[in-house]
Length: 284
Image (cartoon, rainbow, N blue to C red):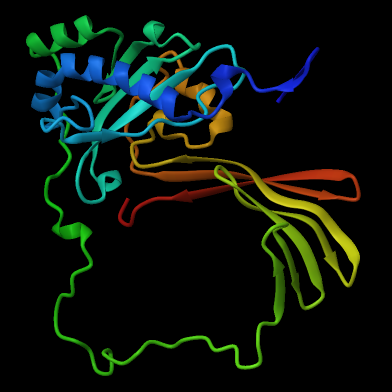
Protein backbone atom coordinates (compact mmCIF):
# COMPACT_ATOMS: atom_id res chain seq x y z
CA UNK A 1 0.00 0.00 0.00
CA UNK A 2 1.22 3.51 -0.80
CA UNK A 3 -0.39 6.48 0.95
CA UNK A 4 -0.32 9.29 -1.57
CA UNK A 5 -2.24 12.53 -1.98
CA UNK A 6 -5.24 10.68 -3.27
CA UNK A 7 -5.21 8.05 -0.57
CA UNK A 8 -3.82 4.52 -0.46
CA UNK A 9 -3.38 2.66 -3.73
CA UNK A 10 -1.35 -0.16 -5.22
CA UNK A 11 0.74 0.78 -8.29
CA UNK A 12 0.03 -1.23 -11.44
CA UNK A 13 3.46 -2.89 -11.48
CA UNK A 14 3.00 -4.14 -7.92
CA UNK A 15 -0.45 -5.64 -8.45
CA UNK A 16 -1.32 -9.30 -8.75
CA UNK A 17 -1.85 -10.51 -12.32
CA UNK A 18 -5.36 -10.81 -13.69
CA UNK A 19 -6.47 -12.68 -16.81
CA UNK A 20 -5.70 -9.95 -19.39
CA UNK A 21 -2.23 -9.29 -18.01
CA UNK A 22 -1.44 -13.00 -17.80
CA UNK A 23 -2.41 -13.28 -21.48
CA UNK A 24 -0.16 -10.33 -22.33
CA UNK A 25 2.71 -12.02 -20.52
CA UNK A 26 2.11 -15.27 -22.36
CA UNK A 27 2.25 -13.43 -25.69
CA UNK A 28 5.83 -12.27 -25.12
CA UNK A 29 6.75 -15.64 -23.64
CA UNK A 30 5.46 -17.45 -26.76
CA UNK A 31 7.31 -15.03 -29.06
CA UNK A 32 10.58 -15.46 -27.17
CA UNK A 33 10.49 -19.21 -26.61
CA UNK A 34 9.36 -20.08 -30.14
CA UNK A 35 12.41 -18.25 -31.51
CA UNK A 36 14.76 -20.47 -29.50
CA UNK A 37 12.71 -23.68 -29.60
CA UNK A 38 15.43 -25.53 -31.53
CA UNK A 39 17.91 -24.63 -28.78
CA UNK A 40 15.66 -25.53 -25.86
CA UNK A 41 14.80 -28.88 -27.47
CA UNK A 42 18.49 -29.66 -27.87
CA UNK A 43 19.45 -28.56 -24.36
CA UNK A 44 16.43 -29.60 -22.31
CA UNK A 45 14.15 -31.63 -24.57
CA UNK A 46 11.32 -29.11 -24.17
CA UNK A 47 9.77 -26.39 -26.33
CA UNK A 48 7.02 -23.82 -25.84
CA UNK A 49 4.90 -22.45 -28.69
CA UNK A 50 1.87 -21.65 -26.55
CA UNK A 51 -0.25 -23.78 -24.25
CA UNK A 52 -2.64 -24.84 -27.03
CA UNK A 53 0.01 -25.63 -29.62
CA UNK A 54 0.46 -29.41 -30.14
CA UNK A 55 4.24 -28.93 -30.44
CA UNK A 56 4.45 -27.65 -26.88
CA UNK A 57 5.71 -29.98 -24.16
CA UNK A 58 6.72 -27.35 -21.60
CA UNK A 59 4.92 -25.36 -18.95
CA UNK A 60 5.88 -22.45 -16.71
CA UNK A 61 4.69 -20.32 -13.83
CA UNK A 62 5.24 -16.69 -12.91
CA UNK A 63 5.88 -15.39 -9.39
CA UNK A 64 3.27 -12.86 -8.32
CA UNK A 65 3.59 -9.98 -7.50
CA UNK A 66 6.73 -9.08 -9.46
CA UNK A 67 7.65 -5.76 -7.86
CA UNK A 68 8.47 -4.46 -4.41
CA UNK A 69 8.13 -0.73 -5.07
CA UNK A 70 5.84 -0.39 -8.08
CA UNK A 71 8.47 1.29 -10.27
CA UNK A 72 9.07 -1.75 -12.45
CA UNK A 73 7.93 -5.33 -12.86
CA UNK A 74 10.51 -8.07 -13.51
CA UNK A 75 9.70 -11.78 -13.58
CA UNK A 76 11.70 -14.99 -13.76
CA UNK A 77 10.05 -17.97 -15.42
CA UNK A 78 11.18 -21.50 -14.46
CA UNK A 79 10.52 -24.14 -17.11
CA UNK A 80 9.17 -27.64 -16.58
CA UNK A 81 8.12 -30.56 -18.73
CA UNK A 82 4.36 -31.08 -19.10
CA UNK A 83 2.52 -34.14 -17.87
CA UNK A 84 2.36 -35.74 -14.45
CA UNK A 85 3.79 -33.59 -11.61
CA UNK A 86 5.72 -31.06 -13.73
CA UNK A 87 6.95 -29.38 -10.52
CA UNK A 88 9.00 -32.52 -9.86
CA UNK A 89 10.51 -32.50 -13.35
CA UNK A 90 12.07 -29.05 -13.82
CA UNK A 91 14.46 -28.04 -16.59
CA UNK A 92 17.61 -26.11 -15.75
CA UNK A 93 16.28 -23.18 -17.75
CA UNK A 94 15.02 -19.81 -16.50
CA UNK A 95 13.99 -16.79 -18.56
CA UNK A 96 13.49 -13.27 -17.20
CA UNK A 97 11.11 -10.70 -18.67
CA UNK A 98 10.47 -7.00 -18.12
CA UNK A 99 6.68 -6.63 -17.97
CA UNK A 100 6.56 -3.09 -16.59
CA UNK A 101 3.64 -0.84 -17.43
CA UNK A 102 0.33 -1.29 -19.19
CA UNK A 103 1.67 -1.32 -22.78
CA UNK A 104 2.28 -5.00 -23.53
CA UNK A 105 4.09 -4.10 -26.77
CA UNK A 106 6.99 -2.88 -24.60
CA UNK A 107 7.36 -6.16 -22.72
CA UNK A 108 10.67 -7.84 -23.50
CA UNK A 109 13.07 -10.59 -22.51
CA UNK A 110 15.80 -9.51 -20.09
CA UNK A 111 18.07 -12.53 -19.75
CA UNK A 112 18.30 -16.31 -19.88
CA UNK A 113 19.86 -18.52 -17.23
CA UNK A 114 20.96 -22.01 -18.23
CA UNK A 115 23.37 -24.22 -16.28
CA UNK A 116 24.42 -21.30 -14.07
CA UNK A 117 25.35 -19.07 -17.03
CA UNK A 118 23.55 -15.82 -17.85
CA UNK A 119 22.81 -14.81 -21.47
CA UNK A 120 21.54 -11.26 -21.87
CA UNK A 121 19.97 -11.60 -25.32
CA UNK A 122 18.58 -14.24 -27.66
CA UNK A 123 21.44 -13.51 -30.04
CA UNK A 124 24.05 -14.16 -27.36
CA UNK A 125 22.28 -17.39 -26.36
CA UNK A 126 22.09 -18.63 -29.96
CA UNK A 127 25.68 -17.67 -30.75
CA UNK A 128 26.96 -19.61 -27.74
CA UNK A 129 24.85 -22.63 -28.74
CA UNK A 130 25.98 -22.58 -32.37
CA UNK A 131 29.64 -22.39 -31.29
CA UNK A 132 29.18 -25.34 -28.94
CA UNK A 133 30.06 -23.21 -25.92
CA UNK A 134 27.05 -24.25 -23.84
CA UNK A 135 27.69 -27.10 -21.45
CA UNK A 136 24.56 -29.23 -21.15
CA UNK A 137 22.98 -30.03 -17.79
CA UNK A 138 20.73 -33.09 -17.29
CA UNK A 139 17.32 -32.57 -18.96
CA UNK A 140 14.03 -33.23 -17.10
CA UNK A 141 13.16 -36.91 -17.05
CA UNK A 142 10.29 -38.18 -19.16
CA UNK A 143 9.79 -41.18 -16.87
CA UNK A 144 6.90 -40.89 -14.42
CA UNK A 145 6.82 -44.28 -12.67
CA UNK A 146 8.71 -42.90 -9.68
CA UNK A 147 6.04 -40.21 -9.24
CA UNK A 148 3.19 -42.68 -8.78
CA UNK A 149 2.01 -44.32 -5.58
CA UNK A 150 1.37 -47.71 -7.13
CA UNK A 151 1.57 -50.61 -4.72
CA UNK A 152 4.74 -52.65 -4.71
CA UNK A 153 4.79 -56.00 -3.01
CA UNK A 154 2.06 -58.00 -1.26
CA UNK A 155 -0.68 -56.59 0.99
CA UNK A 156 0.40 -56.66 4.62
CA UNK A 157 -1.61 -58.45 7.29
CA UNK A 158 -4.85 -56.54 8.12
CA UNK A 159 -3.90 -53.75 5.71
CA UNK A 160 -7.08 -54.24 3.71
CA UNK A 161 -9.28 -53.19 6.64
CA UNK A 162 -10.70 -49.68 6.97
CA UNK A 163 -8.32 -47.11 8.44
CA UNK A 164 -9.14 -45.40 11.80
CA UNK A 165 -11.63 -42.54 11.67
CA UNK A 166 -12.76 -39.77 14.05
CA UNK A 167 -16.31 -39.78 15.44
CA UNK A 168 -17.93 -36.81 17.21
CA UNK A 169 -20.57 -38.78 19.08
CA UNK A 170 -21.80 -35.83 21.16
CA UNK A 171 -21.39 -33.15 18.49
CA UNK A 172 -18.58 -30.71 17.82
CA UNK A 173 -16.73 -29.05 20.70
CA UNK A 174 -15.99 -25.92 18.72
CA UNK A 175 -17.98 -23.15 17.06
CA UNK A 176 -17.17 -21.41 13.79
CA UNK A 177 -18.47 -18.40 11.91
CA UNK A 178 -17.26 -18.91 8.34
CA UNK A 179 -18.34 -15.46 7.17
CA UNK A 180 -16.20 -13.72 9.78
CA UNK A 181 -13.61 -16.53 10.01
CA UNK A 182 -14.17 -16.70 13.74
CA UNK A 183 -13.49 -19.71 15.98
CA UNK A 184 -14.37 -20.60 19.58
CA UNK A 185 -12.82 -23.66 21.23
CA UNK A 186 -12.69 -24.58 24.94
CA UNK A 187 -12.44 -21.00 26.15
CA UNK A 188 -10.31 -19.80 23.26
CA UNK A 189 -11.64 -17.24 20.79
CA UNK A 190 -9.89 -15.85 17.73
CA UNK A 191 -10.24 -14.68 14.13
CA UNK A 192 -8.31 -16.15 11.24
CA UNK A 193 -7.07 -14.99 7.88
CA UNK A 194 -5.23 -16.82 5.14
CA UNK A 195 -2.53 -15.30 2.96
CA UNK A 196 -0.96 -17.09 0.02
CA UNK A 197 2.62 -16.19 1.01
CA UNK A 198 2.54 -16.65 4.78
CA UNK A 199 -0.34 -19.08 5.33
CA UNK A 200 -2.81 -18.86 8.21
CA UNK A 201 -2.84 -15.82 10.53
CA UNK A 202 -4.57 -15.42 13.90
CA UNK A 203 -6.04 -12.18 15.27
CA UNK A 204 -7.59 -11.00 18.54
CA UNK A 205 -6.72 -14.20 20.39
CA UNK A 206 -8.55 -14.45 23.72
CA UNK A 207 -8.68 -17.01 26.51
CA UNK A 208 -11.58 -16.77 28.94
CA UNK A 209 -12.40 -13.37 27.34
CA UNK A 210 -8.94 -11.98 28.15
CA UNK A 211 -6.91 -10.91 25.14
CA UNK A 212 -3.69 -12.90 25.00
CA UNK A 213 -2.38 -11.74 21.64
CA UNK A 214 -3.57 -9.30 19.03
CA UNK A 215 -1.80 -11.01 16.14
CA UNK A 216 0.13 -14.22 15.61
CA UNK A 217 1.40 -14.84 12.10
CA UNK A 218 4.29 -15.85 9.93
CA UNK A 219 5.47 -12.62 8.32
CA UNK A 220 8.00 -13.79 5.81
CA UNK A 221 9.54 -16.93 4.47
CA UNK A 222 12.24 -17.52 1.92
CA UNK A 223 13.00 -20.99 0.67
CA UNK A 224 15.96 -22.12 -1.40
CA UNK A 225 15.64 -25.58 -2.92
CA UNK A 226 18.40 -27.85 -4.15
CA UNK A 227 20.88 -25.96 -6.32
CA UNK A 228 20.53 -22.79 -4.27
CA UNK A 229 19.44 -20.70 -7.26
CA UNK A 230 18.43 -17.28 -6.00
CA UNK A 231 15.61 -17.72 -8.52
CA UNK A 232 13.94 -20.17 -6.16
CA UNK A 233 13.13 -17.51 -3.55
CA UNK A 234 9.41 -17.84 -2.96
CA UNK A 235 8.53 -14.93 -0.68
CA UNK A 236 7.04 -12.13 -2.77
CA UNK A 237 8.45 -9.55 -0.34
CA UNK A 238 11.91 -10.55 -1.54
CA UNK A 239 11.14 -10.76 -5.24
CA UNK A 240 13.41 -7.80 -5.89
CA UNK A 241 16.27 -10.27 -5.62
CA UNK A 242 14.98 -11.88 -8.77
CA UNK A 243 16.04 -8.82 -10.74
CA UNK A 244 19.59 -9.21 -9.52
CA UNK A 245 22.56 -8.45 -11.72
CA UNK A 246 23.31 -12.13 -12.31
CA UNK A 247 24.12 -12.71 -8.63
CA UNK A 248 24.08 -16.47 -8.86
CA UNK A 249 25.99 -18.73 -6.50
CA UNK A 250 28.87 -20.29 -8.38
CA UNK A 251 28.73 -23.71 -6.76
CA UNK A 252 25.54 -25.81 -6.67
CA UNK A 253 24.75 -27.01 -3.17
CA UNK A 254 22.14 -29.77 -2.68
CA UNK A 255 20.55 -28.05 0.26
CA UNK A 256 17.18 -26.73 1.33
CA UNK A 257 17.14 -23.68 3.61
CA UNK A 258 13.98 -22.03 4.88
CA UNK A 259 14.09 -18.67 6.66
CA UNK A 260 10.91 -17.79 8.54
CA UNK A 261 9.96 -14.59 10.32
CA UNK A 262 7.19 -14.89 12.91
CA UNK A 263 5.30 -11.83 14.12
CA UNK A 264 3.78 -11.63 17.59
CA UNK A 265 1.86 -8.51 18.58
CA UNK A 266 0.79 -8.21 22.24
CA UNK A 267 -0.44 -5.17 24.14
CA UNK A 268 0.81 -2.88 21.40
CA UNK A 269 4.30 -4.38 21.51
CA UNK A 270 5.57 -5.90 18.27
CA UNK A 271 8.04 -8.76 18.41
CA UNK A 272 9.70 -10.69 15.63
CA UNK A 273 11.64 -13.93 15.65
CA UNK A 274 13.64 -15.32 12.78
CA UNK A 275 13.80 -19.09 12.44
CA UNK A 276 16.28 -20.74 10.10
CA UNK A 277 15.73 -24.37 9.07
CA UNK A 278 18.50 -26.09 7.14
CA UNK A 279 17.95 -29.51 5.61
CA UNK A 280 20.63 -31.46 3.79
CA UNK A 281 19.99 -34.81 2.09
CA UNK A 282 21.27 -37.91 3.87
CA UNK A 283 24.85 -38.70 3.04
CA UNK A 284 25.84 -35.13 2.22
